[in-house]
Image (cartoon, rainbow, N blue to C red):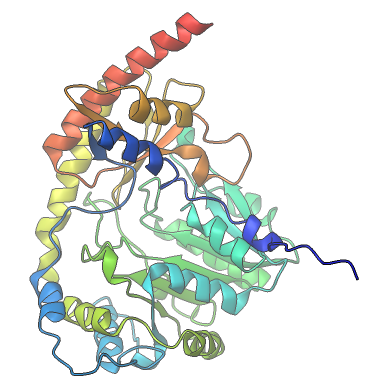
Length: 407
């Protein structure tokens, strides 16, 4: 009998590399050469993690680090419900499932409503890992196109409806948005609601950046604000960015839909439990006074404004001013933004420093889109952002001259 050859899964092969981390080897090599790198490629805040969160880790003194309930420690579920009560949402602990970060929340939510071959509508550009999560459950991301040229406006209801097929199961969105920084207004939310009701779709709302909105005229609308829409709505969330606790790996799903929650409970039991001590830290975070966010929000607003001012001084750079989160998508005067990002790490420095950005194409599933764009995360202090824009401007000039000579 002929010996059968080992093979790997097609599903695994369909999962793309993270565009946020794919240039890490070049960054490691630059660091080994003594280059200081300003990391504007990843949403890792340098904001100090709140003391109650750190204290929860330091003060843990149980003799056994035991499993917690699969859906999460009850006190944390109560704290998350109380957090939503501040916004007028009638969330009960039974409506909350604690997850291993926001990533597992998205994965569980998609797994609960999608079968292999089903389609997930996402406005493009979108958070790059959505493609990976879809591939892991053998579903397909269908992009709803938007453009930097019109401020990433959501297409009309009729245009979006053209992308809906019998295989469409869910619309997934994030607001404030990663990577563009836009915030969905109430009219756009009503558009998504009407489409979901008409075509029998779920609406998964990724709200991890909801506290970070910088202009008084911008109003945030949660999926839980849509009254009478409870059975369609699934909210996913995380403490990673809200409380500068990315390494805690604690997120959650909030939904009134009992069928969805029952399936999430099955998934949760299969992976046993979220991090026990991380949940205690998250509970401490959610119990903090909401005024905690006031200086944090102001700090990010200053960083955004510093980035915007710096980019305006660079010829040929096009962008829209972000309304929230801490990301900006910029179109650069280059044909291949990934090649330029590699150049920044491998071939350029100024006063011993360079900048790491994320190539924009990874936030699109449509081929050839975003090739001249980058995502910039304004997660460093303003002086470093100011220096980064000066480095970026100088690097673009050198890169363009180099490309002109090679023609």
